[in-house]
Length: 383
Ligand code: ATP
Ligand code: MG
Image 1 (cartoon, rainbow, N blue to C red):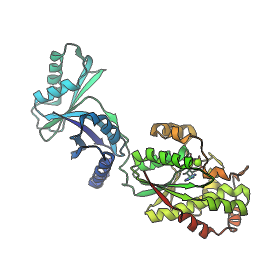
Image 2 (image 1 turned 90 degrees about the horizontal axis):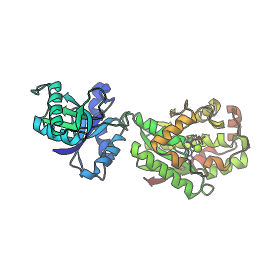
Image 3 (image 1 turned 135 degrees about the vertical axis):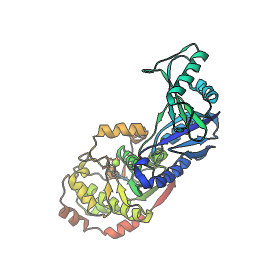
Image 4 (image 1 turned 45 degrees about the vertical axis):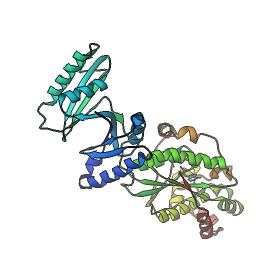
């Protein structure tokens, strides 16, 4: 009898002939999530088994694999020979110590000499005779004993399911570059796109020395939390201080944010191409702030050709906060800090600036040189 963690995957089966490609990616991602923990990972039909781990790390393994995108559910279980005695032995360990229970059997091995119903009855009966504090309730049991008779002469016995992250394996949809601020929204946006199979690279703009080390530490912390799901290994940072100073010096104050955002998009696109990322990702949500109007979005989009994915565009702040809490980033995101956008914040940012006004003001700047200079400040932080 061996302790195992059973990992079931989702949505992948919809992909027909791409199935093996998806399974390969999922294998790589599961291995990455288990890095540093002793284990063996084996794929059997339709699921994975994590085996040969230290028994006191079972919870940690469940926690890690359940976060991997593409995982539908997982269970701590026991792997035994498929004879009734072995199954019963495992069932005794899994069954509740008292109260009501139900046995549910799934038979992948259709040649097994007993039907699922017969196995349920046999194991249920033996559990009842072995423990007088148990009773069967097939409608609303307090505990379950699940038996999964595999095709290779083994059976899996387990008592519960942990919900997996769902979605598709990271990197099955290619790569995107997330513009990550220290706020609530952008980590959630990155999580959502990684869930749809994107490898998410991270880019943060800072305005050192106007923004401090604390602001940077905060983004590093957010990136670390996010990377438990996205499996991202690096955070890229770029300075936009010189750009903000130039804008401040030469352009209409109400366009500060609008112009800075156009620079952010240009720099992001330049780096995305360098990283081989095929799209940009932001945490923008329509109407949330002055720069997130349709006009603001038009202004930012017009300086790039890569598609910009904005998964939160139709979300209320409350909905985003709920997701940030679930992701575990909320508490860090709400720590007060100086964002580079707030440093030169005008009193009345333009809400619906026309493109011609923006371009006129921008023509006072040497755009290419400023972008080049920003790219040259690129730093990489290992997460
Ligand atoms: P967030 O909560 O993600 O900070 P926000 O509501 O503060 O969002 P803005 O500051 O207008 O909104 O930023 C909109 C989006 O622009 C962010 O979600 C993020 O994708 C990007 N962004 C803003 N500031 C930065 C920054 N300093 N570095 C990288 N990306 C940024
Ligand atoms: Mg922000």
